[in-house]
Length: 192
Ligand code: URA
Image (cartoon, rainbow, N blue to C red; front, side, top):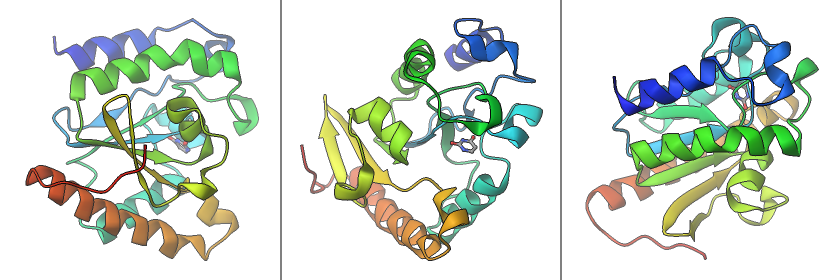
């Protein structure tokens, strides 16, 4: 059994926080286990809970569109969330829910060892880099504990503010350029 299948199995049977009581399906990450890049969102919504897969609803369509625009295919990358079960009514996951779920994300990242981790929105930013709001660092590469991160908006933000659609696409184009450099062993600029 692959190490990621192991994590998947632990996620789908997890009862570490209260969210398991209201879920239809837990939602482990999906995609290429050897991906150079991992995209991290907040938590599953209704469609994800029903299908057991991340980013398959409206926010997922926006994510897919931006990925394609920048030349990424969903199959080639790995997509996951900080929290693997849907919070009721899509509320933000609470601190205890995030901390009890964090080991799964850490394990996914430890196994995949991506060259860069793309943070989608404030919850992932807060959980991975302890930041409060992405505004200052959106569009930037950040190095923390020997890992490289790229910070951008959550695709769902586009639903409420359509002008952000192009912001997300442009950020992904920039990110694709960064990844290309990393693959070639070139230096990239980052903040600490
Ligand atoms: N929003 C997220 O953060 N993750 C999903 O999987 C779907 C919507």
